[in-house]
Amino acid sequence: MAEPKELLEDENKIDTVIADDITFKGNLKFKNSLKIKGSFEGKIETEGQLIVGREAKVSADVRASEVNVSGVFSGKIKASKKIELFKKSKTSGDLVTPELNIESGSVFNGTCIMEDKN
Image (cartoon, rainbow, N blue to C red; front, side, top):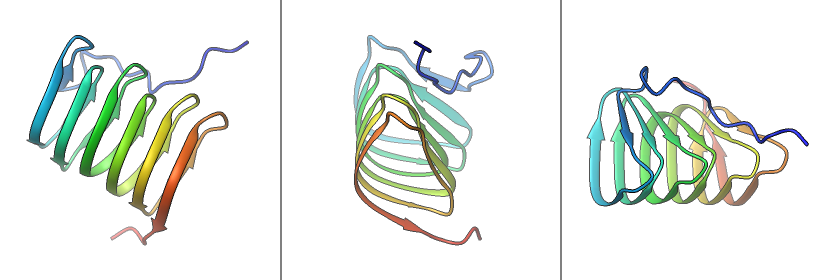
């Protein structure tokens, strides 16, 4: 059986990584890319990319350019470019994006509004 896909980024090319042993609560604001491997609860704002790793558990209100979910996410995501939900991910909440990719084997419960890219 094939291993589930995750956005396999070279972590050296990602600006910031929240490691799997970290639990963070609060507000994050950044400009480039962030990968969460641990737990996060709060609000995230970025002009860049947010990657929710396979083992991550995120409960947040997110505004980003692009969001990739491989782990567990609950909350709201507003992405100006696209949202990708990978196999074995579990997402519940509201999504607003011009492009949505849901890989077979992922779970999504919530609403989605597709907007034009501006």
